[in-house]
Length: 273
Ligand code: NAP
Image (cartoon, rainbow, N blue to C red; front, side):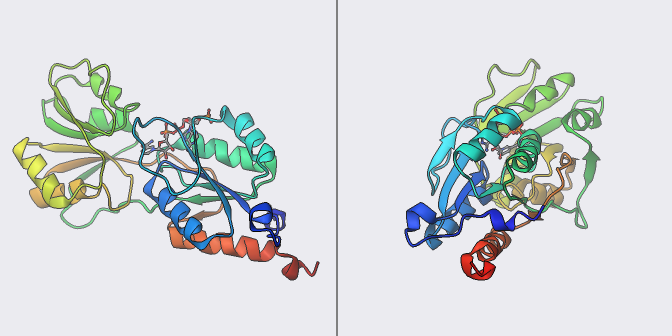
């Protein structure tokens, strides 16, 4: 789709004519992009959060919270708010939202960019076992009881109940309620970033022999992966769900370039208007 010309050209009045951006957030990249755009000025920004986390981090842009009501709801929102460009900066595992964003943007005729941080790649010394999804990862822990650090979201953690023989140390941002229906589980509520040295201490003190992790990418939660490598501990690494096709960048800087290009291409001067 040649969507570039759809962006509203900025007018003399900054507020009235500034391109209207909706950033689907819930990640540090979304926050960083919003902060960079707010600092530059010249865009009318809004950031959307799913509203799952009880105490979400402060955001540098006007923020709305809660689902849109599927593809239809998001497409209607894009039209009602006259959004010029949609940035999907949700977590790489937020597959439903990313799918909805792709469909809704198409339906509403709004340019879409996905901002997706690169995956972690194994390096020498890593003991990774790849898993297709969380259920597969739990199965790959094997039948014998193990001591597992599971860094999972509230929606995902129930999968551990399929293997009640293990001792789980579950780390999540919000409390796991109700507790898991397994005999051995302890809980840590914490929000990254987590330093490698602290992760080593955590793994050692709790005699962890397997780490169950999503391949989230980024620095904030890589500490446990580096610590596991240093200690010779196996990591069961859950692969990312498939993404919809579309324009994708891996960094905030590239997203800024994309947005500037979009604005430039849509400006009256460029179109000779
Ligand atoms: P999901 O399964 O893909 O989305 C489920 C539903 O939540 C969506 O259909 C949508 O509801 C709503 N939703 C998700 N993200 C939204 C957003 N940014 N703004 C408004 N509504 C949103 O997503 P998820 O895994 O629950 O993730 C929810 C949020 O947490 C995302 O913003 C994601 O970036 C963040 N997060 C997720 C993970 C993870 O591992 N999944 C980790 C860290 C942060 P409607 O259909 O009603 O619009």
